[in-house]
Length: 163
Image 1 (tube, rainbow, N blue to C red):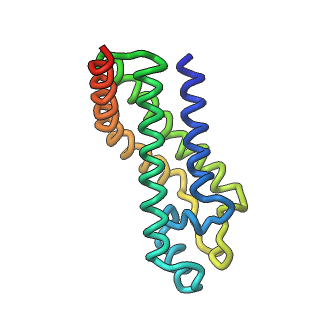
Image 2: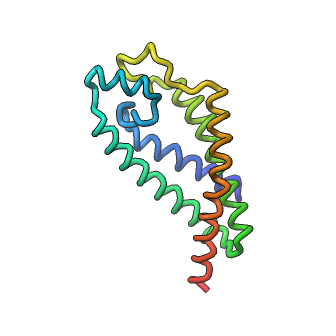
């Protein structure tokens, strides 16, 4: 069952990214390196204020949906009530999501799909190297250790309320 849940969680992650970018990479310019962003601003394709607003809207929606989905899976679908069980499940989901993002989203979808190429920036590398991707994933691995504790705490609170 957990494998199915992980697949669904990663599919939700990919869907959220697709909804955020739509069919225009400019909608997700905040994910690009600063060099790409600066070129886009110079070309007049968008402005900093618009990018900042889109980033804020996306991040709030993304983190809310992903956290709610993870809490729902652990608290309701799996009916976990104990902190350490909830913590280990949350950590597993967050780490799988982390590496899914790096390998499937960044190194596969972003690197290979023309959707992510912004006209006028073709000469600027925008996909992280494997070394950069691994470094980022390792840093996020440490962050998710704490994020999993927050999720587990919420799951335990939900369990106490439902008793």
